[in-house]
Every structure is written in C-alpha cells, then in structure tokens.
Amino acid sequence: METEATLPPLTHRSLPIALLRAREKVMGPIRQMLADAGVTEQQWRVLRVLEERGVLDPTEIAEHSCLLLPSLTRILQTLQGKGMITRKPHPTDRRKQQIRITDAGRQLILDNLQESRRLNAWLKNNMGEEKLELLLDLLNELDGLERGEGE
Image (cartoon, rainbow, N blue to C red; front, side, top):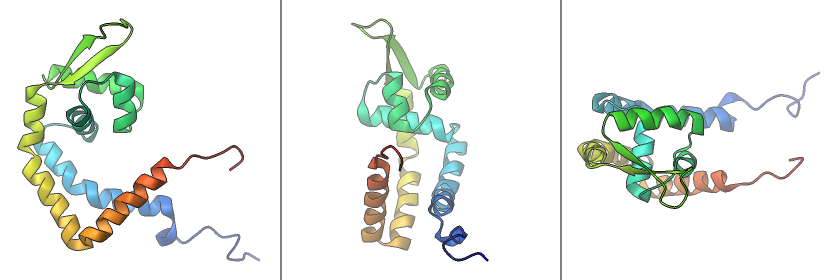
C-alpha cells in the first residue's frame, strides 16, 4: 500500500513544475517582444549581460547568462553577424576573447525597454511589489545554494 511518504508531491506542490509554470507565465509575453525585435531569448540574455557588466570573455558571459559554452559560441557568431557585438583578442592572453556590446546592441535594448518595463509593471501590479521582491530574493537564494556530496 502506498503512503503519502512514498508518493511524489502533487504537481501543484512540485518545485520543478512550479518553476516551469512560472517561467512560462513570465516568458510568454517576453518571447513575443523578442520575436518582434528579431532576437532569441538566449541572444537577449547575452546582450543584457554585456550591457550590464561590460566587456567579458565567453566563459563569463555563459555563466552570467545561464548558457552552455558550446551554445554561446553559436549565439556570439549570430550576434556578431547582426552587428550587435564585437570580439577582440584579449590583450594579455591570446587564447581568450573580449566580447563587447555595440551601439546597435544597446539600441535594441533601448528600443524594447518600454515594453520590458510594461511587462515588469504587470507583474508588480498583479503580485505586489513586496511579493515580487521577495520572490526574486528567494530565487536568488535558491540559485546560490551549494550541494555537498551525498546530498
């Protein structure tokens, strides 16, 4: 006989499923904005990271934009082809590259800033600013957790 302890949690109380549902709720409208702008979610994340953090190498970009390095290589090629980023060899380590957002990349962000703010305002209005800030704090805390061996 199965007991509550041996059954998986109901899907509405499952953290992975709740995170996926929440992601879709947030990303649905953003995907439309990005499609209209002609960029993918991943390209947008790279541009936002470069705008916020300045010149970075690909490893740093991958870490900050939650992308795998092999995927990032293709994304950087596309963004460079669109004139949104530039790449230069690192001045002291020729094995590394320095990636920088261009004025065209910045303009893409600026062109979509109003819509991005509108979507964020929708979340604040529906959740409340305090709850939204708490959610962000909790998600950042979750992201910072480290698992030890055997956990």
